Image 1: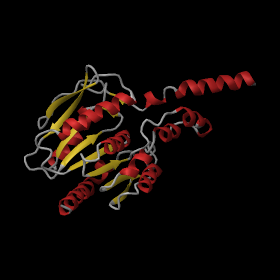
Image 2 (image 1 turned 90 degrees about the vertical axis):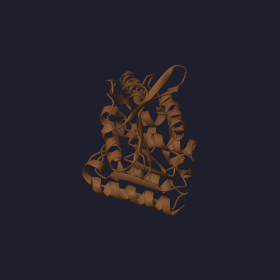
Image 3 (image 1 turned 180 degrees about the vertical axis):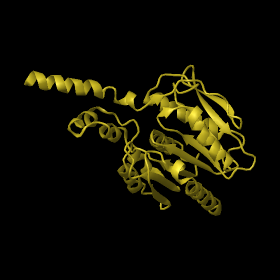
Image 4 (image 1 turned 45 degrees about the horizontal axis):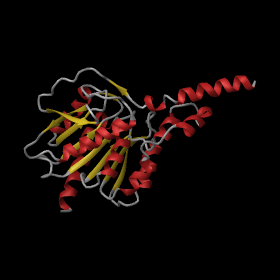
Length: 269
């Protein structure tokens, strides 16, 4: 019996070592240019670079810096960026290491380091400083956005997160059966503790989440909202549908909420 239990525990521990890798599901296929965008490559580390698409506008409503979810690449996520561009926004969206045209080993450390470089690169683009900037994150990108916001609080004027998870540990625990959740609880490192980081955010915040979300539970956004103690301009917009259903099922209201946020930012000047 002891040998059997030890074998089961060993399998759990072995599988827990892959939790960090399971956060990412990259599509390494090449990303073709989008008609309305520019290709940008941002160096990080010694010799690697990440690929970004920049959709410039002459007179944008605002700038969007977008961190996408843990799957696909800019071939699909670029379509969402193009939708925001056609709605009047200037958009910058990037891939992570090993996604699309980006290079480098896919680790939490490289994702964070390369995204930080991209945020600084974005801030120095000639047309960015003349307009308000909104940091947007989707799912894993929502968690990552909290790290970028905490490390570079002056770069962004507001933040929108759809279906974010709050911590790596909580997300790892969510994807395993209840009897085995002790393994990710003990062994998963919180590379980004969103609940702690969002407590430093002082600017407008919009959280978007569905109670039907099976990938990142709705309660994660509830915990983030509660932890955002330094801003009184915060909202949790409850939508319906599966994970990341906001744009597909609520496009008009989605854009209306974004436009209202931008108008409030301009009125506060």
